[in-house]
Amino acid sequence: MKLSTWLSGLVFAALPLVGGSIQAADTRCGNGTCSESICSSTAVIECSDWNDRNNDGWAVSGNSPLLGSILAGKGYNGSAGWESKINIGSDATVWFDKGISSTSGPLHERHMVMFSPGYQFMMVCGLQKQFYFNRSGGRVMVGVTKASDMGGAYAGQPNTVGIFGFDYYGHYVELPKQAGDQPTLIQTGRWYSLETMVDPSTKTVKMWVDGKLQMTRSGDSRFGDGSAVTSVQDTSWFGGDPNVCSKNTQVQYVYHDNHVISRSYIGPPGGSSTPEPAPTAPPAPVLLP
Image 1: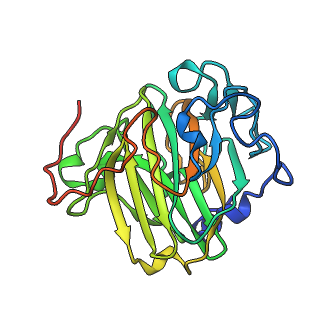
Image 2: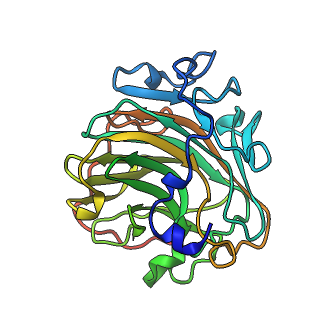
Image 3: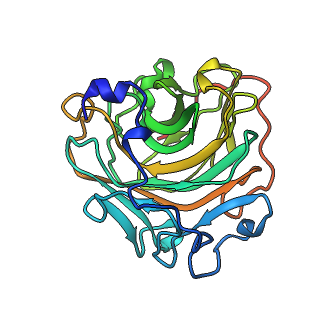
């Protein structure tokens, strides 16, 4: 894919639902009982814990299993989960997508994510992609990049320390560096709960990391036309020209598990059932070891 094509913002258009039509069955934790009680909530649209190692109705890219698949022992708490492989200097890995029934109001998605030890957050063309909320009038993408990209007190962080953010259609990137934000630095080799809320009706986006509200953005015209979310996509790194964008010097992996999509706040597995309120004053940056 050429860089000019990637920058057009039409990434999802280039990533069709390669698995064919969306399946009506096997959409709630496959053939087993969901590992999280929240999956029985009436607000929940989709739960996939992958423990039966089936796709749960998600369409999977044609580069699976070469660049990633569901594997036993690779998920949260040692269960089955998605392993995405990223080759040296590559911009591609596995992705999987699903159409959903939604409204133009708030929609939450939460999954667990871990980056392999020594992971290099080194794709320099925008955010390394993690999850898409797609609409007819645009999309919101959740991603990760080097914490040093935030500058200031974070400028000295190594490339193995990341930060979650999001961008609007057209790759307008938002990182948690405004007053009131509470950034969580991402260390490799440990699991994080990553939850994002999008509300097309108010053009609002919120992000929680491990149950802590990291950032809120609202009213931005770049959000799109207010149309409802109609599909979602999970990936770990895709898009851009690998000769320009991808600078990782080692084979590395991203692990995803316990996907939940809901019309209300989800929270970490076994965690708080109510969202943490926004801070009243900006905290001082905390540099983790």
